[in-house]
Length: 482
Image (cartoon, rainbow, N blue to C red; front, side, top):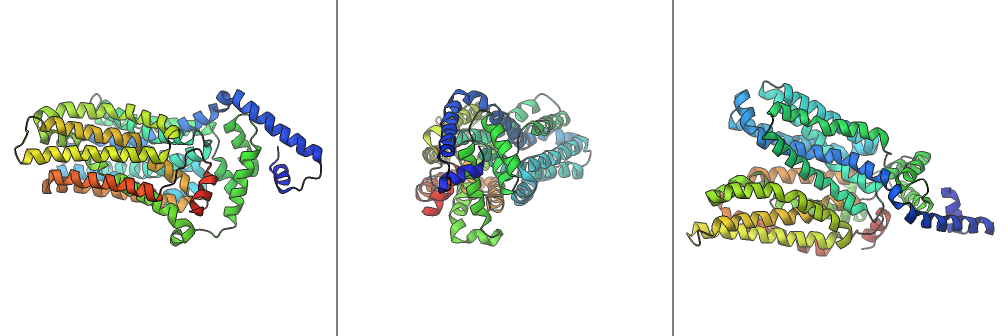
């Protein structure tokens, strides 16, 4: 059914009653067919999501690479601790540059084009790491992979959100976080089995899988509509929903929204601070700040040292449990995303991370005063595991989902880049300062993180809208009306 015909009916311009009846009957028939063909019609959507989250898996592989490879790389290349620290941290610097440019790139060459480019950067980076015999090539490789995952961290959730129908969008977008966790876990496990050079080569697998898969999936329909490719837009939307599904109403809604956005001026960075855009910017930036400054990268990167500092018995048990708990809990978050809603999930998650940090802080407080020393290791392990479990169920994924939903299509590039940049900057600050804070006061560090998690709940109550069950266009209307 043509978009123009639907607009005629909506505007009351159709003079042929029979045509209106026929169109409405087609819609009714299409809606009935939707339910019958739902499983088949979602095949392309699921394939597209799988291809996209190969970028997320690559993200996790890059993050998880440095820990298991540290001893072997330092021995083979004769690196000092400071040289290896540079190798580890330069990933975040590359990711910041990727975040800054990600929105513009995804807007200019499309979501698929941005993912292709990111995969190529990661391939070059992994090859450089594999071939490196000097620190400089090692760092260049790490910087390239960092840039690639910086772009991936923006474009993957955006691409999935723009493809998915509203009833599946939350769960599918959450797969981004699940595959990040899986990629890191796989890298950690493989790193105990294979050499560091072989481990670098395994990082090529998700890149090549993504590059091949992109030939078989459509571009984001909303991006195609934005750049004026109406024929390709309709074709992509039909492929995603299924050949027997009536897409007319959804196509009209998307096109109408895009046309409204086209009437607005081209957005620059300074324009984000206008009244119409400041609310989604505050939501996106605020959630990323609370996610990072709640301590995830400090606690995650140095979990083994945290367990060991509480007592010898906590080290091995805590590290194994930490490695095993993230993936199944993240799966639970995927299931709950479109059932419980974004707001309840993130508030429950923040409450749990606050509790976990409080328990860990209390254990170090007791240890410092020589109280209940037999219970201190168990309390540290319990606190950190509660923290990571509740983080994985909501705080890890929900900010990325909401980021992909709240920005209008005309500011998604600039706004999304700023939000992702804030996330990576926060990740660097927390991971860099964690050891300094622990040296200052181990219990004080965890109490600060606990307080920040509590502040997250207040922030969500005050500013964050519920986006569950709404189209991206309905979300914009809701945000602008508040």
